Length: 293
Image 1 (cartoon, rainbow, N blue to C red):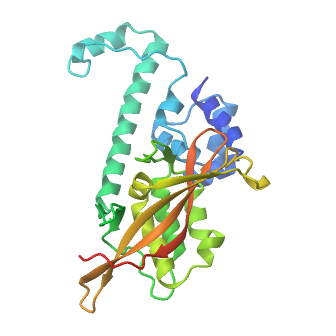
Image 2: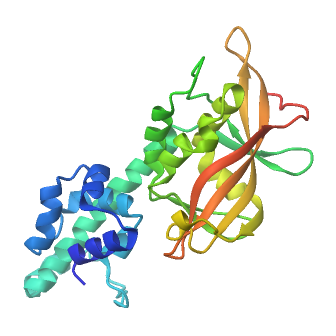
Image 3: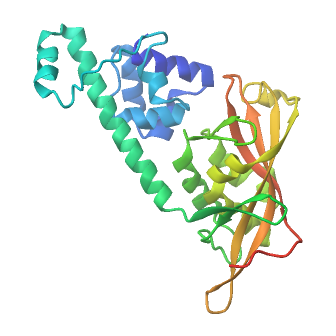
């Protein structure tokens, strides 16, 4: 299957329009339409954005199912002459494949650099309390709304994680961050009812989502009974327990203590067989002694 064919097959699977793909990637709708009309593939520098929008990995998009991966002891990137000779002897399709592979390496490098930068912006640690519960300590307050939270900023921040996935240590479940999370997290019925400290807690918990997923425990399953979720939660819903802590500052802007919160991670099990974080709900401040800095 050609690359552009995979993209349109995935659009059909997700019931996503070309207009929506354009909105999520910044690629013009006319360009997306041309892929099918002219039977051409997108430019290599657009693939990362497309994968994020479609909840696909680069491997899924670029590699055919069942294609063997050849392993060789020769390091072609050190043996430059061998690499050039291989390229010269290849037919047209072979040369295209080599170029495509090199483009993929460059894209992977860009994604890794972006991921590294994103991690550097977070100040997160994981500790255990006296009862043995893991707690994700979020050391910075990023969203500081004095009267109300600017949820648009939270939504924009969460978009950085679309396409990422994390493993729950206690169960081995792999949880993906889908394209629906930013809007649901920042605009769900539950979120709209929040105010004060709990609203601020949920907004800033967004910084610790990877670790909150990894330390979560107590998986609970229920069937999906809502018709509107027959596609995105076809295989039901899961809830996991998780804990996070946020700093409380004194009048001199020094950290005085950390307040600990419990939260339920709401996970949807979609028709594609993957599990996606849908929202964080039931956030409650723990009544036990706060953590000391």
